[in-house]
Length: 594
Image (cartoon, rainbow, N blue to C red; front, side):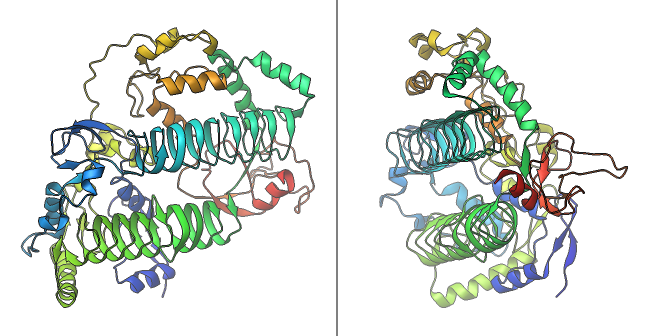
């Protein structure tokens, strides 16, 4: 079987279906996709709201926090009631109607059946969290697991007493970190592990009491990559006055200059075989994958792993002992599932949402401990198998066609226009950002900001410069966001400081933030590379076609296999060609850093 070039019906760009792809599609009995990998990923993300919360009424008239806005005519149950035996999802079951498209019927079921206000299991004093498990005393964290006293963070796990984190695990007393782990007292850092009492680090390991450093290993008392005595280091840090906003601003400028002179590994691929992507650990035969740990034979997937095998187009959130998963996200202990979201401990489930401990479901929402169900109606095993084949054929013969003319037959994920969320409420806006005009033009819903009735008491420029000068009165004030809603970052225009947050800043000697939590989150997102690859050549001793040096910033400190000639190695990297970072192949990077 040969590879085929096809045209994406969404973005109209060509993409390639490889022989291995055809083999997988044949194995799970689905047709090849009509959307390219990037558009398929964005389409799934348009169904996942992690961080946008709304105040609305539940079915019983109680005020609740929900991921669904009050503009959506859904029946909302709080978690404890949704999970109780006081109602039965099967009571909403419907006969399949072959005079209407499948997706139209599924939408009617979704619009009528009760939905969870948030997904926040085993939470203790952590009401304002979503896609979380085992949170204790946490506030506004999402897509996270087993954290204590963590605030304003996303994709974090096993952390304690941390604020403003993104993709961070096993850290304590840390602040404004991105892609860090197993650290203590680490602030304003990224891609650094096992570091202690340090600030503004990039790509550092095992460092203690370091500031503004890059590409360091197991160092102590280093300032901008230069070794100092403890006394001189302490004096330098004291002079920076990191407890003040002006001091942090100056420190960030120093760090940015150091960052420009550092080298960058083309991809973080550790203990992996035949892997292509970025941030891959213990993977094997994974292609075009990102942020996977412990995955095998997977393609076009991100955010997951943990014994994931033989799966395509998964994520965000795929894995945990799952196999043969396709076009799905938020999966745990599943097998042979396709076109699903929030399906746990289940087998042979298709086009379904929020199903648990079930098998052989098609087009279902909410069943627990069920099997052989279609649109929440019970069938016998024989009836189910016969009906599913008829429905698949019906989905081909009578496809759903959206307002943009895009066609959805069997084998396509849910149409974006059926999503219960607007584009800018979902993580699609975070990883594939659009303006309001662009989203509407592409046929996606957009939610304008809610009318704010609060009165800003303090503008960010009027806040005390130093945390030592901040009184408890700030807890009573509404503070304006520096962006003033003029960005495209879901700016709330204002925010408040909560007591535990102020306590953290004082303990860590950190100034008050000047941006709202949403805008702070987007600044962290900008520090990570996109979920996309470009073909490039190693920049070690690189020259252009005229023989001029294109990398005259970083000077090698060790001998490389290519001598004094430009490195011939090519690779695929998440650093786009128009970026200014100095990107090295694995061999040259290891020669310099490790």
